[in-house]
Image (cartoon, rainbow, N blue to C red; front, side, top):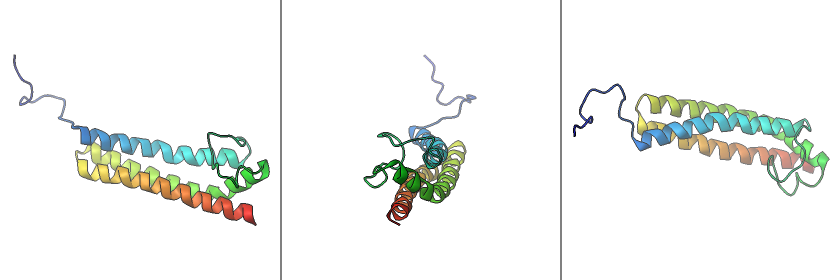
Length: 132
């Protein structure tokens, strides 16, 4: 039985951490814009009040008007979040492809932190608009 470990194979060695960085980056590239799109759908009324998608807080779920008002106010923070998360996710992907595993992991986790920060900022904006 021969081993291909030391041979010059066309397939480079890819470790699990590198794949994790790549997966985190790809998830961020998709999630940021997807969350913004959902927010926009709710802000235009195309996505009505529901129990599975959108800013589902006690204030936004009070009425259809509160739902739309809150999501309209959340559009700007959600758009900023989508840009930051998408950019950081793209950086994670590039770092993973180049073999910079620690950097890709850091960028991928940073994208997730930015996603959470954007969600909290969107909720704050929604609540301020509803409370006016």
